[in-house]
Length: 228
Image (cartoon, rainbow, N blue to C red):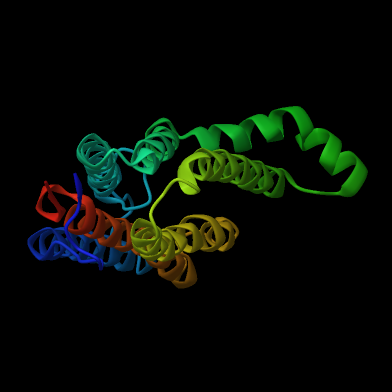
């Protein structure tokens, strides 16, 4: 089996559906955030918060990661390209981090073991230690995922390399929102307008880029993109 398309494509029905759901979930969070900032409500329901683990939006993201993994498993089955199996493994690790909150746990562990030492010797507060612990975990995860993919890269066709280059650009958007914007958001004043804006850029942006990735993977590597 081989890919039928030489270029990439987004699966339009999937793209429109995912982005529509994203817009609704982000919009609900924006409204809830404005009500919090203006003191019209006291508590923000966790299930409606795009920045909370196991909220509707977080669960929706996990389903998108799962769809990406399934499609790469399918692509490996029908094309025989090992890189797709490697990508399925790499994204499974990313799904594990997202669902088990591994980077958050790493930040807490870093603070538990090094927080007091960092403060006593360098004046670094626990919040910074937690943030650095999370970034350290992301760096390690990134290297592991990259190493897994590179194992099969030399045996990958130039056509697929080009298509995966587009995927890499989309994934870069996830990294910018989920890592760099998250770092800034972590230190923003709570219950403030800037905090809300950063929340939308971080978690809302991450949602949109994952949706773009899912629609791209389904359209480019899914059942409609293979032939005998």
